[in-house]
Length: 309
Image (cartoon, rainbow, N blue to C red; front, top):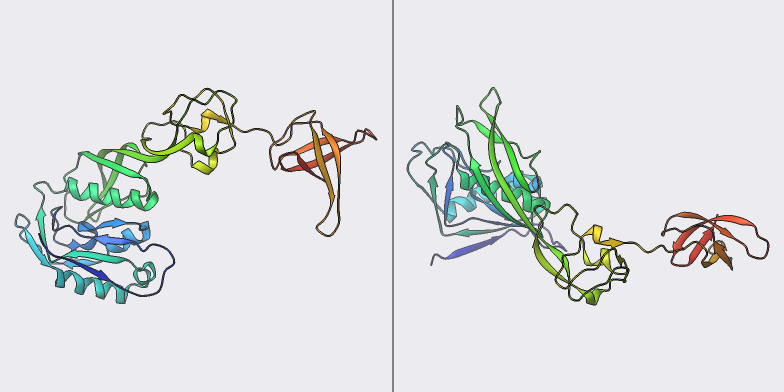
């Protein structure tokens, strides 16, 4: 097993987890003369800014024999990385850590555009957008660029399902297309017991499970998004809970006696009044004073509490 060197650049102390840039010991790239760090690196916990910065780091400019493998020693890679950190303020600010094997074998694809390289770059971009997601990327077809001066445009890359990735070819910037599919899995709430329609959902009723959400019509939910909401339909054990499976319970219901507050932080009085409307927190509803029959407006601030306007 080849020895792995972990290179850590301590630029500033960070309270959050630092992004990691790792390089495999064997990697395939496209048939181009320039070998860039972004062609071979895998990024974890990074941002799109970091991913783009790696493409500016040129490791070799003399890859002329495109059908022969290239071997890079860790020292050669680390020298380029140090130079990039010294010259790029954004890299110093992002403060990544690097994992580099003692030697990297770089092989060129049989086709002008390496599917493995495209999958790696798409994966880096997607993980920068959703680090907690898991992706499976499959490239169906790649074009044949007219020159080796091409680049990829990730600005319109879809998050899941089928995609067409623009390849801008040569000085004329002719658009060609790479086709593929993206499957995405994400931690989503799953029921641990039968939840009946209209029943309030609690934390103990759920567990988080990695679920394929590629073709989900609803957005996935976090645990805190669900607790206290009511089931819009019965949910069997093991059901994935989507936004459409839930409904919010009004914080004030029409005909309910609510506590109406009047005043400010220094002086406040409360009186029981009847809600004339139903509303959620943040809604403006009408409330009636049962003694005077006067109707006022109030902002629902929490369950059963209205702040008079």
